[in-house]
Image (cartoon, rainbow, N blue to C red; front, top):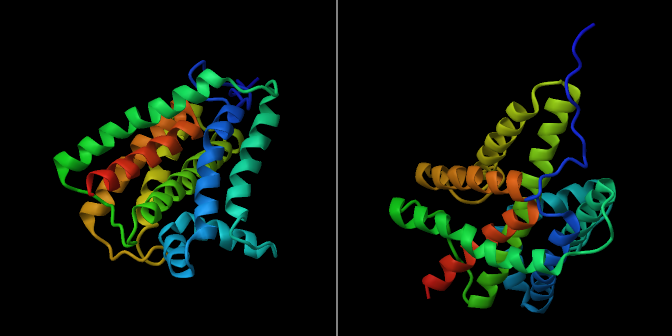
Length: 242
């Protein structure tokens, strides 16, 4: 009899992995900040901000394919995905206040290595075309939330499901491949035909390295801390550029 390969269990988590409900509570104020900021900004600032967050545009295109539109849909998608993940995990409907508070602190700490990589390599991939600090802050938050949703939570999870569950490759190898593939696509999507930035090897390399780093945080800590680290890095960059 052939030896059966282990199956991926949606309930399999380590003690370090952030629970979906905790991640939702952690991210909800940031989602509200981005969405409310989008509504109160003038139409020019709103259009520019959404154009810069390519992952936001990709989500809108996805919803348009099913006849569902609206600028609030990507934010609602984050909430829906985390709630669905929580239901699948069959965990209690309680969030840990301490865990949520820790996520805010660790987001700043996880952002520091990216900031150091930026400074030492001078491979910064960040451009801030909007005029006000609040506009750029909204861009920072939106990029962190929606890019980590698309390229870490959705893409890495999808690759693991296909590779480990369907094709029966080893879980560890599939997970590493998922992190590397998502990092490459994360870096690539900022350039044509998806993004608007002309291709630049240094910017691409920085984003690819950042994608591997954020993917590793996602694997060991979950979506909330990965998005928080992404947001934290962006906010540190615009703060230091004042």
